[in-house]
Image 1 (tube, one colour):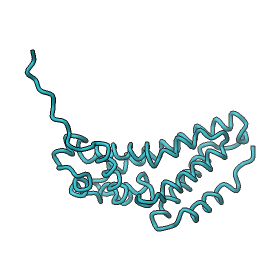
Image 2 (image 1 turned 120 degrees about the vertical axis):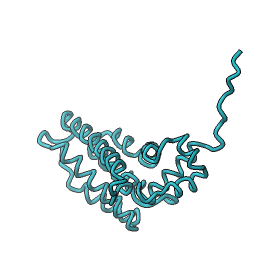
Image 3 (image 1 turned 135 degrees about the horizontal axis):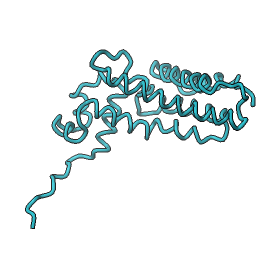
Image 4 (image 1 turned 90 degrees about the vertical axis):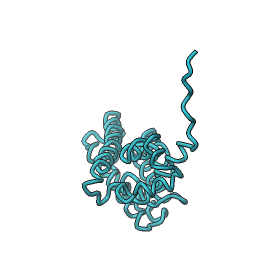
Length: 199
């Protein structure tokens, strides 16, 4: 019979602590979020942070995944809309909602997280650039399907349309971080789609 004892259970809720870390990164950016800020918000020691999540870069990646599955889930949900126009409308409306959620930092973790990142924030900068590019690629693939199915005109450029929608969404994030309200930002989203290419 083995005398090995099971490891001590964690004395904290790992998912709840990760949510708190996500909020710190969202509000302060990668470089602005110190380990002290993170451990105080999460209610754990540095030793527990390293044991449960790895280093700061690992924690940031996990926080970004929590954001993607939580406030950022509108991206994947929008892709299920029946038409390209509906996809773009749902994507931008989701961006407005996610960037102006009551009780959460204004703006987007994926945009704010690496703004003005210096040398120590390069990993976060690169991680977020890849994250944003992935979202744009999802849109491009969906708009390519719309062209193939005749929902968008044959001459439409799926890459350009995806880049346009993503650029508007990123602008919405920056405006939200600057204090713009959801109603005003939704008006911007609506205006961006007024000249959608007809099928």
